[in-house]
Image (cartoon, rainbow, N blue to C red; front, side, top):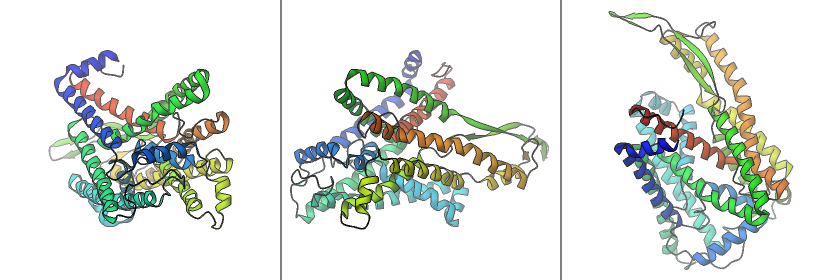
Amino acid sequence: MLSAFVNAFKTPDLRRKLLFVLGVIVLFRLGSTLPAPGINVSNVQRCVDLAAQGENSSLFALINVFSGGALLQLTVFALGIMPYITASIILQLLVVVIPRLEALKKEGQSGQAKITQYTRYLTLGLAVLQATGIVALARSGQLFGGVDCGDLLYRQDSILAFLLIVLVMVSGTAVIMWLGELITDRGVGNGMSILIFTQVVATFPGAMWLIKEQKGWATFSAVVAVGLVIVAAVIFIEQAQRRIPVQYAKRMVGRRMFGGSSTYIPLKVNQAGIIPVIFASSLLYLPALYAQFRPDGVGAVWINDHFVRGDHPYYMITYFALIVFFAYFYVAITFNPEEVADNMKKYGGFIPGIRAGRPTQDYLAYVLSRITAPGAVYLGMVALIPMIAVALLGASQNFPFGGTSILIIVGVGLDTVKQIESQLQQRNYEGFLR
């Protein structure tokens, strides 16, 4: 593997791409640590430290994961990649229910370019809403759940200062989108995925060091050992797939004969990816927000007792159930057995032993529902690892091995390595995988 890295950097074209990606990552992290204008940095840092130790620390765990700690510190890139993720998910859902978007998707590259443009516009709209809400909470002192550590903004009552911070954060989101597209066009891998990976990895060393400081070297070593086992298991499941064989009959088109080949449809065990975990986390975040801003509201006390701290059994059971539900829901809207069966029938393809048309559709739906079950359970178990660690070890809410963080790290890492491997193989090198 080390020799493969050396070979990658020996290839001029691939070396330029890798160095370009590293340069964009450095620029991205610089913007994630640069405070927005008008922010009282010392008070913000004090609030971050107090909130991490408070009872509502679990409220900020997901925010820290997807912003690399930038959001709570009110930096230029505070919103991170989250508005783009949300916009992409919304567009994926709308493609299923809006015929115009579905027609654009079927147009190929030109239609996909229009959908990408709509995603950008929606990202900026969501960024305006999120930045306005965050700065308003910072202005009122409620951003950290009422933690009193002084004013977060230098000019609390200035509308111009308020609008300037919002403008800087929205502009930061636009720059992040541009950087992600630059990586995709000129670098290696998917740009947005690599930026998400960067944000998640940025919080990893701090979380590991906090475990060492709180629990000592013995617990730290045990966590590292368990973490390596978890990473190996996640890699195994992420690579696992059910291959459905497909045979294409021979057919004459003019004077040429086509078909007669055999291939397969790869159905991954984790067909939904990390989306169900994001949906479930976001949905469970809403009751905690309600209890935080309406402490005297109906059911606020019960929510604070059962749905604020992630180590409560009610929270864990609800979280697991939502992940399983959203796994089936997302797979159902992204993989259409009827469309796949129709395409196979149109081009003369069939599954051996299964008739074309409706029987093929029913068979694909049956296999998909069976294979989604272990994938959904796997996602739920991985997502519960940090909460179980909190309950058993009293660890930090930002326990590094598990949840969204480990899924993002492994998923993006595998995809990027495969792309580097393919480019190395084109140049007759052995590559990463042997």
